[in-house]
Every structure is written in C-alpha cells, then in structure tokens.
Length: 245
Image 1 (cartoon, rainbow, N blue to C red):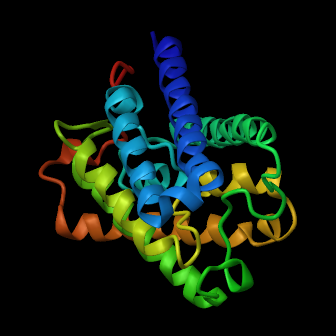
Image 2: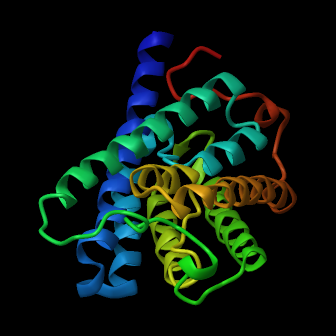
C-alpha cells in the first residue's frame, strides 16, 4: 500500500509540474506578444488552479520545490517524502520544457536560445532590476504563495475550495513579478526552460533556486506564528493520504 501511494503522489507531482511548465511557460514563449503580461499571469494562475483540483487530493499539488520545503518546515511532510517530491518536480519541469521546446521548434523564426520564458535580472529583466531587488522580489512573492498553500491545505491535501486562492495568488504574484524577473517563485519552473535556453539563463538560475527556497522557509515561520498548531497531533510528521501513520 505504501509503495502504491508513493507512486501516486510522485506521479501527481511529476505530471502537475509538467503541465504547469508546459502551459505557463508556453504562454510566454508562444503567445506572449499576443496576450501580454495579464494573459501570461492568468495562464499560470488558471493552470495551477486546475492542477490543484486534479492532484491536490493526491499529493497536495505542490508542483514547486519551495512549497514542498515550506511543508517540510511546517512538519506536514517527512524528509523522505519531500525528497521524492523534489525529484518528481524537477523531472516534470524538465519534461514539460522539453515538450515545449519541441513544439516551439515547429514555429518558423521563433527564438528559443537565451530567452525561452526563463527568469532573469539585470539586462535580462524587462525593468532591469538588479540582483538584490530580484532576490527580494522572488523571496517575498514565493513567501506569499507558500503561505497561502499552508493556509489552504489540511495536512497534505488541498482543502475544499483551497485551489482558488492558490491559483489567484500565483496569478497576482505573476502580474507583479513578470516585469521584474519573469516571476519564478518556483525553482523547478525556472530550471526546466533554463536548460534549453542556456547561456545567462543558466548562470542566473542560482538566484531562482535560493530566493524561492528562502521564501518557503519564511512562509513556514510566519504561518507558525499566525496559525499555531491546535494540538500535539499536528506536530507529528504527516504522510500523504493513504500512507501508514
């Protein structure tokens, strides 16, 4: 039973991250000049909303290493489960980016090198935000997203209508963050496209790994203050639904 549940949760994280990267980054790469920042932000938000309802009951639909780190810090996951989630998320992001790269190559004249929906700062930012500003922006935006996840989840699974504020939050932070850094708030979302873009997209990736992870830890700390555990049972390491206690 445990092996079957583990397969289900890791498959959910893999597929969910694949879908988020393919459609979210795809909106930037394939349709950005037609739908603009608002359209891209809504695509990310609506995609995460759909993923939350599809996979939220299975794995929590983290689809983001920063969310998983926040859950780990909040003692909703154990380390073993978190590592499996991270591997599935990174693999899903790379697979989603690979499929998008294959599709983009079928569009005559579409440039995929250096850009390809990647995140960046300095001359790779629409507003030329500097390194410090980019780090702060990614940290704060990710902290908000992870905080909402923590508030909207019961143990692991997304509770009730929790997918709606989660999706709306990603849309809002994307609206703010796209002109600044391209709005990562998700190391997996940044890594997948960066691998295929190469160049500065890869050399700047470290920021979009570190800042979101710090943001996830900050969110867990704030959530612990604003939503203290109601009982001792909430302090235990909790497994995804169906796992043995």
